[in-house]
Amino acid sequence: MQNDVVINLNTGDLIFYYTGENEVWYDCEINGNHYCAYDYVGMIVKDPNFHDFKCKGLFVLELNKQQFGFKHNAALRTFDEAISKCNRADVRYWNNLSDKCKNKANNVYENVMRIPYDYRCGFIGKCCNSMGLTCCRRDIDELYFFSSELIGMALYMMGIIHHSINYQNLSVRDIALLEHDKLSKPCRIK
View 1 (cartoon, rainbow, N blue to C red):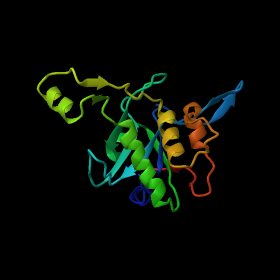
View 2 (cartoon, rainbow, N blue to C red):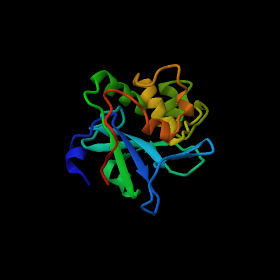
View 3 (tube, helix red, strand yellow):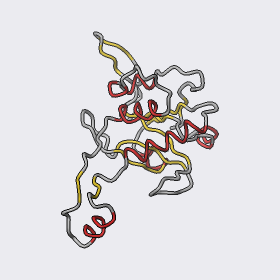
View 4 (cartoon, rainbow, N blue to C red):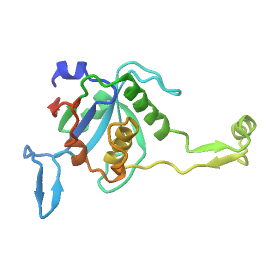
């Protein structure tokens, strides 16, 4: 692992995972279909300071479960836990990402990790629910994502992806090839 790169990772940096077993690693197009070297993508969160979670260290906002073709909930994992599940990990880090963008990245966490229910009666409903009465509880649809959709949404909310681009249709390859003057080229860390 390249410690000098890992030490300098910050909120908003992108991490790409390759989980394949072999050393053959390429990005190609066959009959109009793009095949990406990366399987999943996540976003670094350094020293999270959220309303329900405060901690020091590197974390990764990614999917709860990595399974091709299925959407899953978002999860926040430690950096070490996140890279332990892959055979190769590359990062693209931002050069001088503004604090405003980093704060917007933190807001992404608040939006995707929200409680999947709320209370019609506010505090009274919350108290009733704690006593086992669910009459005031209102379920909200849980948020499910593909990994590229989650990170695409984060980049959109940070103002990095233009509003004319539909972030829901981005692939891992699209994010890996993202052109931005402040974004580094991929750097292997594992």
